[in-house]
Amino acid sequence: MKKDNFETGQLVRSKFTRDIGRVVGVDRDYHGARSAFKVYGAQRGQAIRPGMETHIGPTKDGIRDRVKVQWYTDYENDGSNGITYSDGKNLEIIEEESA
Image (cartoon, rainbow, N blue to C red; front, top):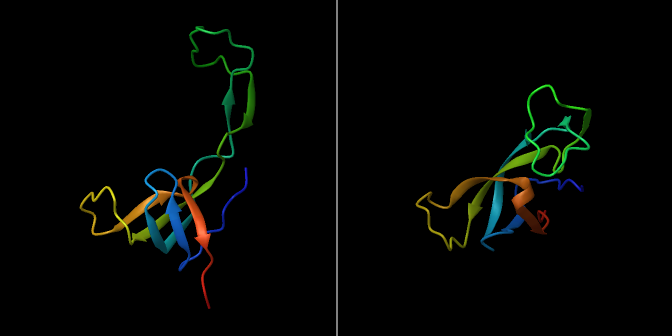
């Protein structure tokens, strides 16, 4: 999975609400993990209990940044004054920071 490099000042869009905002802060490697215990070969409907792990494998989303965004469009209007934290996997960069 490609990891986006979020930087302060970038214009971003939410993949879910389509809101547009600007990055005001980034907490690097805040969410996720690189690997996890896996149970390979489990049958559909089989109960998985602790101790049944068969391998350690990579996670689907890996390590992601927590991004603090000042929203310019707030279609959901959740009362947060336009500033919220978002998981980096839920954002797409639409414009790099201009110098």
